Structure formats: structure tokens, C-alpha cells
Length: 393
Image 1 (cartoon, rainbow, N blue to C red):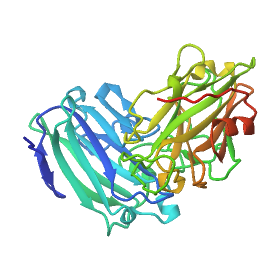
Image 2: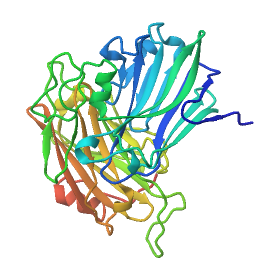
Image 3: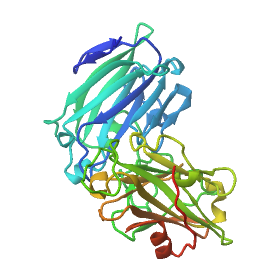
Image 4: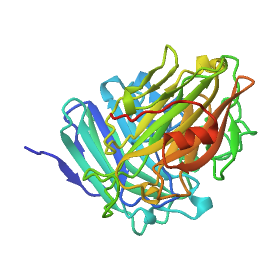
């Protein structure tokens, strides 16, 4: 029996459990538009008690208050019983990255939806869907969770906010470094929250991650794409479930060892032992909203010479322009690095996306976006030297 409550802006409902999954999603997904989700843990004055109470892509976990964010999925996990009493309200927001500068706003998305589910069972508790066709703002306060007589309630808000993530964060009292997306040579001001996210726009463009005394932390490489089915008569691969786009890499160590980490053939790797790279083992059907993730052990970065990040269409029509794929490279205390597959070859099944190179034990990332018919052709182009046989998952 479905007891979900469907709300309109201004309505609220009690929450029957303190452990929740809350997903924020939107209707259309225009090319070149990136939506970020965030949360603000607010005191009785409607401000954050500290900058740690701001949850977003560069600061996705606050274990003390039992809240975490999966940025690519737009999904929060909340254990409200862990929230200190200083937290009286949690505001959930969506912002368009560099929206004001790009002239982008929520009218381009048509709708946004907040879905509240019970953590253990997945039962839907509440839903709020908002028509944003007339919203000209680049930030939106979507919903709130708030305390009421020692219980928690959920309120549908849908309030537009002028500006992007930085002015919204400052409105809630977060001490933000200047600029949402500074250049790699301009680090965030000491002690301030870093909202930087860097997109490598041009083929061949490179950036190096800042070197810290403690070295690199774990490096997460996430691939996300549009898995909606595409039908084309006579195509080599077709699937009723849509496009299955697989994330993988070739690796080479400083002493000349080479190999691959990919789902094809079951080569998932290992994070703590050679090759110090691991592919997640989530659903690879192309339907997972979180995409796929490669994890690299940053503490072992000195072992590597280079890593080639690539993706290939295992099932589905090779329609890269429809896939709208993007990889996000994330490491602690570093800006997010985005590489979009924004040039297309719809007659090829494989794309070399980015090269990660060890330059003086620093990590340099270069955008490639080169397309190939298969593994062997890509291997030859980059001089790897592996031998390939037919494989399956």
C-alpha cells in the first residue's frame, strides 16, 4: 500500500522515520547545463553554525549530524536522530553551475522533483514536483526539513533565489572563497569554503592538482550518462534496456608494468594492492543514476606513470551525442574536475576521455575525447602494448 504524500509548494507533512533517502532530480537535461544539489544545516537564526554545516560536492559528508550527499546522484542520506539540537532546520537546494554567467536558469529544466524515501525499506514517504518553466533564477530552495515539537517535518518550498551557489551559501552564513570556479592557479582563501569546479572545455587542455604535504587522497573518477534507449535499425548492438556505457582504464607503472581495469573480463582491480585501482561493482546496466566509479589509491600515486580513462558502449547504439556523458574527477581538498564528451563520433564504440600523468609525483589531467572502433585501435594510438582477446561481463 502506497501512503506517499504528494505536496505542493507551502505544504508540509510529518516524517514517520528519522532515517531517510532524499533525491533531488529535474526534468530536462540540456547539454552544457550542470545542476548541483546542496544542503544547509541551520540554527534557530536560519544560519549555519559553522562552515561544516554546508553539504555540497566538495564537502559531501557531515558524520556528526548524520548527513551525507552523493553528488552525481543528487541523493542525500539523513539520520535525523543524530542531528545536534543546534540544527533546527535543513534546507535543500539546487543550483545551476555558473548559471548567471552562462545565462542559464531553471526554466530550462521545466520541472524539479524531491522524493523522500524511508532509508531501510525504500518506501516513498513524500514527493514534491515543481513546474519551473517560469523560474528565471539559477538557484532554488527546493524543500526544508524542520523540527516541530520534538519531531521532524518535511516542507515543500520551491523558492527561487537570485544568483548561484555562492550567494546562496553566503545568505545562509557560509564563509565562501571568492568565485565559484577560480582558475587552478588561484587557490581558495585560507579557511574559507572552496566552491570551485573546473571544466576542461577544449581537447588537449590540462590541469594539475595542487600538491599537499600529505600527498594525494583517494581519487574518484565517476562516469555519468543518459541511458535512455535509442533505436536504430540494423545497428550492431541493440538493447531494450538502453545504452550500457562502461567506464574503464589502462594503467602503466613507473617500472613499465601495464594492465587494464574494466568490467569486461571481470578485471575490477584492487584499491589497496596492485594495481591500486578499483572499479565499483554497482549495476552496469546503464540504468544506475550514479553511473560508474573508478577509485585510485592516491597514496600510491608515485607508483604510476600514466592512466588512460576511457569508456565504451557495451550494449546499445553508438550514439555519443545522445549519451551526453561526463566524467567527474574528485579528490579531497581539490576542486572537482569535469570532462564532458562534447565532440562526437557516432560510428565508433570507444572513447578515450582523459589521460592522468605522474609529473614529479603531481597529478596532471588532460582532456582527450578521441574515438576508436575498439580496444586494439585505442591501444595503438597511445602506445600501450597490451594484447586483447574477446571478453564478456
